[in-house]
Length: 350
Image 1 (cartoon, rainbow, N blue to C red):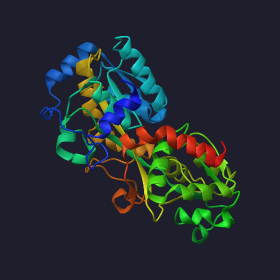
Image 2 (cartoon, one colour):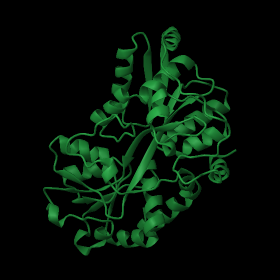
Image 3 (cartoon, rainbow, N blue to C red):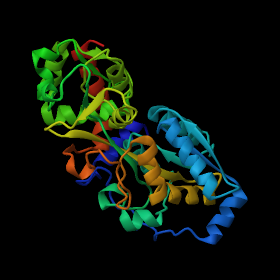
C-alpha cells in the first residue's frame, strides 16, 4: 500500500487529537527499566537510531545514554524526515531490519508504519505516567518525543520591538514588502505542516497576499532563522522556534513572535520497529528518550519543547502552556500534501 493510500485509510481513524488512532489492541503495560533489561541490552551492545532531529542534539542524546549505560553504543543515522521514511520503506520491502528506534519530524509517518504493522508496542514508564493521552498512541506504538513551533521572528537590529509584526495578518502590511523570508513546504516537513495549518485556519488568500510581498523563498525550516541572523531579511514568516531561541541565547539579534492567530505546532514521535536487531537495547533507549533526564537535555541543548511535566523550560522562554498554538493533523497533511505543494508553488512561483 502506498504511503498516501495508507494515510487516506488511516485518516478515518483519527480522533480529535493530533496523534490518536483507532484502538486496535490494548496497549501493553508500562515498562520499567529493570536490571534484566539493562543486562540484555548490554549483551546486545548497540542501538541503531534513525532520526531527523538536529545532529548535535542526537549526538548529545547518544552520549548521555552511553554514559549512563556503559557498554552500549548508539549509532546515530541522521537525515531529513522524508529520507528516513523512504529508507525504512526500502529496507522493510527488502526484509532488511537494520533500525531499532526511529524519530521523525513528520508524525504522519507513524500512522503509516502502524498501519503497515511494523511498529513494536512498547510503553516507557514515563510515557504511561506523565504524557497526555493525545500525545501517545493508544496501542502503545509511539509517543511525542519532541515538540516545537513554527513561528514569526524578526531581526532586533533592523526592527524595533514595538514595530514588529504581532500576527500573520501583520505580515501583509506593505511596509514588510521585500523584507520577509520563509521556508518551502515542498522541501521541509515542518513548513509543510505549518502551511497546512495556516491554509486551513487562515485560508489560501493569506498566502496569495503574502506572495505579493516579494518574499525571499528558502528551503529548510532552519534557513529563515539564518537569513534573519545575517540581516538578509528583517522578518521571517515561518521557521523553527528552537533555532531562534538558540540564536538569541548566543547573543544574536533575533527575537521570536507568537502570532495572535496561533503558532503552528509540530510533533516528532519516537517508535521501536518490529524485527529490531537489538530489541532489548531498543527498549532501553526508548525508555531513556522519554525520561526526565533526556527530555531536559533536549530542552537545554536543542531549544525544543517537552511534554514531560518534570522538565523545566529555560528562563526567558515563553512557556508552551502560555502560547496559543494551532492544531496538528498528520493524516490531513499527508492526504493534502501534494495539492498543498502544487498550489503553494503556483502562488509563489517557486
